[in-house]
Image 1 (spheres, rainbow, N blue to C red):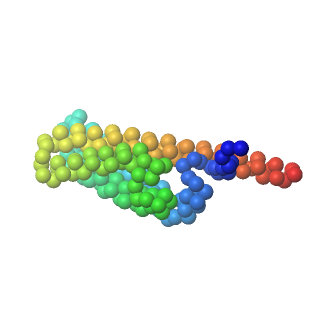
Image 2 (tube, rainbow, N blue to C red; image 1 turned 45 degrees about the vertical axis):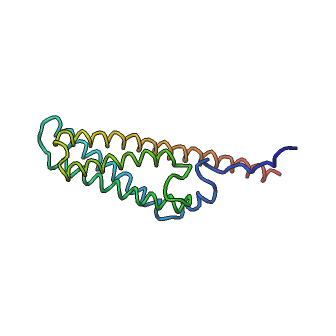
Length: 175
């Protein structure tokens, strides 16, 4: 006969129904939804300041301040994201559904903190510090893309799951 048949998953493969319920009911989901675009805005503005400094040699203070603001957003979203992951998946980091996003997030954090340490202890010349910020921002873009793709997959899966529920409902009604 074989193994017993498992019930079909509802929605995305990222979340079990219980995880989806926890995700939808926690305040941390909204916090992440607010912080993520604010962090991206801080990144975009900072990138302009950093590129301006690298291209023209002006605006160093504005670039430094903007990198610190971007770093504060990053650390805030990482802490609140870890809390969100604990609420939804039962662990603070590296839940299977977001393992690789968390791995790359660690590299993003490392590079941002390396910039801050380099600035604080004057370990590199300003130009090299800005290139370190560019490296941090490049990995951040990769990480943001990972999360956007995951969000899209969750939405597509959710829509597919809702359609499956609708077709099952129609079958039940027609009986």
